[in-house]
Length: 435
Image (cartoon, rainbow, N blue to C red; front, side, top):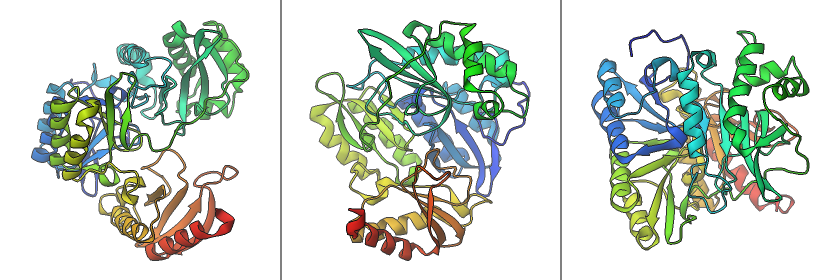
């Protein structure tokens, strides 16, 4: 793949972006899925050509950090493992999120994986779609219980069923829990995605890289009218996607097939080392279907494990340093790279998160907390219940999620130490006003 890559601040497989701790390579995974053999190739590449730091991202992809001078050797090894795009220009546009339990979820209405493969082939094959921003993203929701429904996407499709017929509800620049803009029949899912992408590229100016930018000037109704000229779009009323349990990505959970489970395990703060990834891949080979699935919660699943082997697999995962219990505070914390690896980071977010986890453990608290080294919020595309925004080394502003407030939510306190944060969260949880 020798064609020139377009300039972008976003890393890709073929575009390694510099950071304080070395180069970053982002490996985009189809539906978050990676074979055990491919996972071992990632582990080997991180070990041989980088610092060994492997990150699970909030779009269910992988990143290798700390890449040195042997970038070509690293890229060639990953391409040889089948982890690259169909063409170099198609790497940036492979932004399609599925449920981590697509095809195996007991609640799913539709297996989204075949449609996802069709969409990804289309956007890579047609040069027109290569003009999309590297951040332009689509979500396919098959109605699974395990689904990230809080990440905004430029286009989302959510399966629904009415009167025995299935279709896709869809929306623009939002989340599946928003009111849908319209619907199409199930067989028109691919046509809908293609039509929306073409319409966006036809109407958006170069600086309007996201659907929300276009909607700031043109109404949803105007776009829907244009869309209806290309395929049969219908209104949908009285339907809303509901959220499932918030910890289905951690621990042992039954699949649609009787006797089979998936096991969700959390790399502490989203970061694996080669031994962890290699070990998880070997367990997937021995007990699962020789694949791993990464999730938007920055963890991974081992699917298709025989229920009788679940306890043994959990024990072995924990021996690798992975977390399988949602009751462990560290399993519920997310943190960006922080000042240790990012020039924009104002604090050592990962170190501070470990300190906070230990303090929460002491207080008997398990909370979903996001530590962000700056306002860009790279570790979380959604608003967490509690956000700590770094303002200086070891000090954070504290926000609580509030639907009426944009961004991180309502500012509660400024310039807190981690000890003060833990004490405040503990006191708040014990207050009868918050019970």
